[in-house]
Length: 145
Image (cartoon, rainbow, N blue to C red; front, side, top):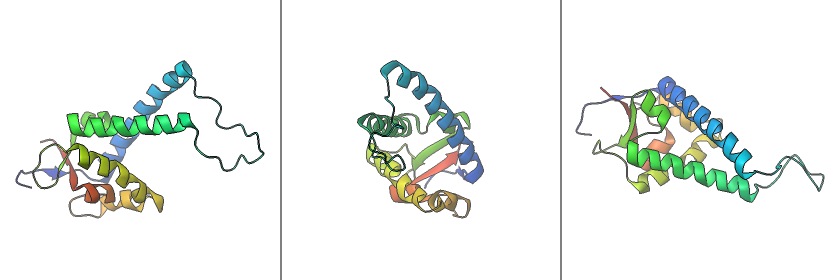
């Protein structure tokens, strides 16, 4: 990367994730109440321990993915990251990420979380403070100086 940046470490990124999740939950509660999310916990077949996602659940998952990718591409970060003066940038150029990088970064959260969140905890030990999702998308999270 040609620019001088300080990579954002685990704890500040964790704080940004908490802020982002609070924002998403606060936004989704009234939207779900307004548009009706249905009762996804009730079971008609007696198998309540494992249920496939409803169409409504898929809609919200896609909505959240588009929201995150949009924020990374347009604003260089989600509101939580931006409030903490963090940016998601292309690892090589230091510029904002492309739509393709945003999609790969979002998809990268799944393998990063699947085994005890090791791919996210990786940020604490990596020299560039990259999680697996960052490595996949060739992105870095930096502090604004």
